[in-house]
Length: 350
Image (cartoon, rainbow, N blue to C red):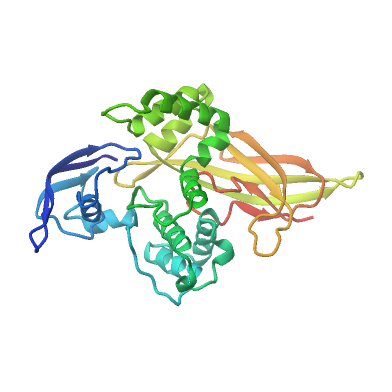
């Protein structure tokens, strides 16, 4: 979905001209706006996010007229402004649940699973019941990142997303963007691609590298059988419907447990208007089993974790673990975009 901006202009009532005939072609990928304070970066992002009117010009997101079809944009938008307000006495979890409801997640169970997964990824799960007014600046910014990621948006706009984050928190945000590839093709391959990119462009003059250079570098270190990941993650809108239908355990004479689980998987591609079409499965997807988690934790100790090649909608897997798991399932860490997060794991019955 390409973003096309033509001759966009904005002058504020006090006479400050924030934008003057801005024209940009932004293809699918990840891009940053660079410029000094007051250059108009936030103004441009607010206009694209449908929060501010332009004086003239046009902006198209695929076939959506951003300046006129604001509701269509908001359905696929995730937005983190440079500064944002919250209801101070509401808990982080309740506020995310409310925003998820506003985004159209009517199913209460689904919302709960989605919100919990987002809180884990933002490293806020242990603080989920605290009022937002009690959050530090870094925690508040992480909560802002979490709300922007609700609903797997097709257009994600973040204005100074790492402002207020300490170095560790900043790295956590960047890691959200790379964790899927790292799991699939290996950390060393990712590092090799990044080292090559840095060596190629460090200390160079414009033009600077874009996300296309990054995707090309990642593609070079990705094995042929995993090239579909580059397309799924960076070039096409891909989502899955994955669920665990059953998970049963049988105790062996040696005290270990044979686990048999049945899973169902479907894969979809969406066009720029959001219309989905089911496509054939030929994907590596993870399965796993976990012990009972400690209080306040989502996952217990990992008892089994394995990538499996899935080519059919329904599959049955059997493996052996040293102790009785509490849960087992497919894509347990929700690395792939899923329609419903709450049915990936199933309680193991003996």
